[in-house]
Length: 142
Image (cartoon, rainbow, N blue to C red; front, side, top):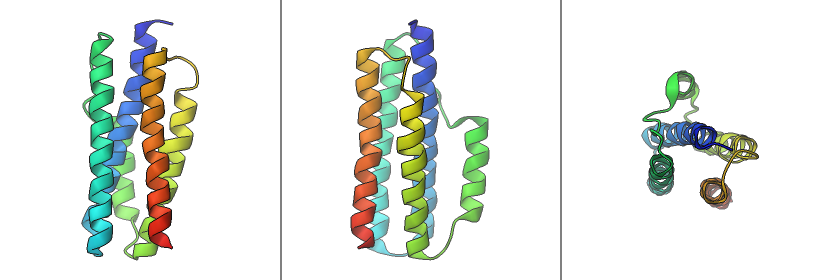
């Protein structure tokens, strides 16, 4: 497997990570509960750290990291912001759905094949962050 393939896979994951950062921004802007806002801010910081790690790995492989979510990600982000519910529980459900669908399931599909061991470990760390955040939000809902 070539570095080009690994770089493209990691860049796709990085663009998705930028989408996650933007989604958390939407939640932070919309939510009124200060405790939940703080939780979303903390989660956003974790995702930003993952983006930084992915960018560094891409650079170390000789690639140029994506600097945003890409065109389709930007369109998705705009629609997400417009369609976001105002009610706190619905907002939480939206966040859970996004983390599960994009942060875990889609990311797992993305990294199934074409990664070297170090890149695979990093991708797993990114996915594990989403899993941890899902649990944190489920705890908050209870």
